[in-house]
Length: 316
Image (cartoon, rainbow, N blue to C red; front, side, top):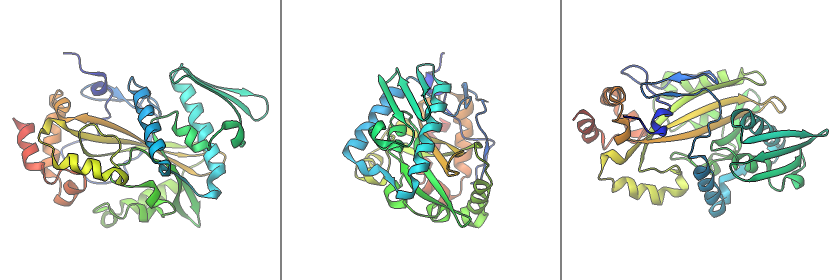
């Protein structure tokens, strides 16, 4: 049986039979083989679902422009992020090109979206929109920019349409420690202070990544606090465990070379349990990890109430 593309390219997040929070970062890009295929050979990823995901982001931003937030002092970092992401995209997909035009001029062409834009770096009028918003219209990743002040990191800008139970509008200006306050066990185990210390040590151009995982009822990228009235109802009414989705975030951490800000990219992948079960090694490992997971961690990841039934479903 040939597995679907989304299964073959899925970033399987588990190693071993036990899971705990950790900094768990590695240099990126780096290809990883899984029981189904391979992922991670590039920082950005443009599968066949690319156009649909970009269209969904555009629709969300049209309905709710507040998913793009930015403190005034972050505009230089936003231009830095734009140039970095368009360059990365151009290096990844042959249908996308970024060309220099004179001293500060650029021409961006994205054949997959039918977008062609000439702009001058730092000139918002020439771009036609804020640079961070334009960057997010070309890649599927949510983009958060962290500013460093007095040896601490603060979330001071972002375009986030596919959040999992949080809101970029709410966390704007929060410190790194405040951002992660709801995560269970992290402070007791010291993972968050270690993560911030690691990020502060990144040098310009450094790129690392980590994985995080949780759950979503149905194929829903937008599981933000803003849309809770929709996905909260969907979770309560879930009657087919095969439609419970494993939600994996591939999080890239980049020290931007011009501004020194840290760009936090969050790319969300969804896979229903019925497709997890197509890979026997995944089905067995996920059941083992889920059974051992401490209650508060299972609750935080959205598996608490459904765990007994889901374990029975996986082990059938």
